[in-house]
Image (cartoon, rainbow, N blue to C red; front, side, top):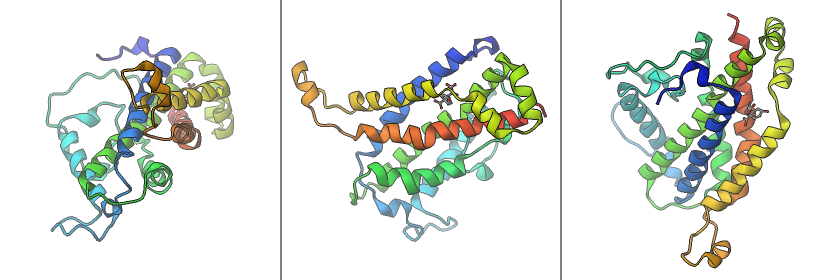
Length: 254
Ligand SMILES: O=C(O)C(=O)C[C@]1(C(=O)O)C=C[C@@H](O)C=C1
């Protein structure tokens, strides 16, 4: 159901971020089922007439084309990785609440997320090797990257809530383009610590092999190293969500 304008509060946007953690943790577990599968990312692997790029780029661009036609990017929470290829939605439009300032539409940091994901994150948690499942590998990269992107760009909603709660604190910093001051004002270190701990706990629990004999659960093998989830949040998800908040606030009075 749509969120009404007055339903966005710091508590409700934080609840949304908490729910998104589940999707990201499951996405990590799903991707870790496959080895690295380097052909998926090799620019020379595909020979498709009219397409130049890797298999993962092929899967992303074509999936986004279909999803754009089906209306995905009409929702202000969604940001495409290849906006340059997209055509308009072909489905009846839905009246999404116009909660964000129009400047929000110009913020899309998916190119940085793309680099971070393939260069830094994947090598941290995926086993080396090749099992031939390149399309499935690309599909799991897509759903995980979409989940990370949605989380990071949700910073726009978090920033709007914070701005509306105390415009008197934000306005002078925005007018003087004080990025450092904005960063300081929107930061809650204790919340960040909680987020990292919770994500690691979720990764531990969701990644456990479940046995019907409950005393065996804690001895179960882990599907995935839970510290990768908290590292992902500490090094990238939280800092980039904050970067999106600063970028959004800088445009807030335009
Ligand atoms: O909860 C907030 O206030 C947020 O801005 C989100 C978030 C995060 O990314 O988890 C980012 C900055 C804050 O320091 C705390 C947490």
